[in-house]
Image 1: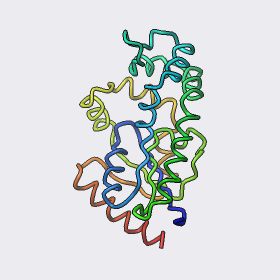
Image 2: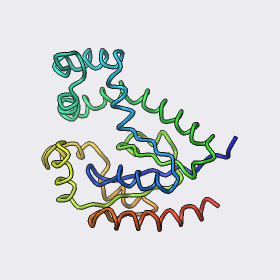
Image 3: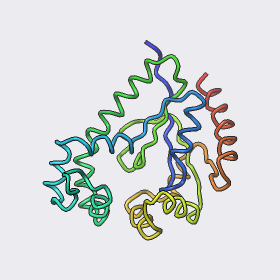
Length: 204
């Protein structure tokens, strides 16, 4: 069995570019754990759908009985109580999957390090210990533009969601490295390559 890989946690606001940073790290040989992808897969499971409908009502379902992600998010981020209820349903299975993927990557000789692209990495009590934290910094205007371009939500919705999260200032202070993602992909990729060189030197 291969020795355990270092775990890199990505921090940053909504629309800051954490997934883009993860993609660049994948090109450098990292195994990526995408929590949003795991959640989307869970939302297709009948057992989870039933639990969510029981908890929040059938208004969160589409006509064909699937989860309407926008409706669910609107209800979940309406109060801390609702968000806690959603997390209690989703998070146990999410972390089971994350731990399984970590074990998988630890057993792969092709993987240099493991990257956690987990939106609420700190807010969940750091259930998966990390060795290195990278904060993806991006100004509000750019983040809102990216969210709107993807058809996600506007500035009001972005701020409403982030009210339930640890402040970006605190996340930046916790991080070992900070990426500036205001200038475009090429500039971001150059920073990541430089940081990853430092990280791999540290791993050795």
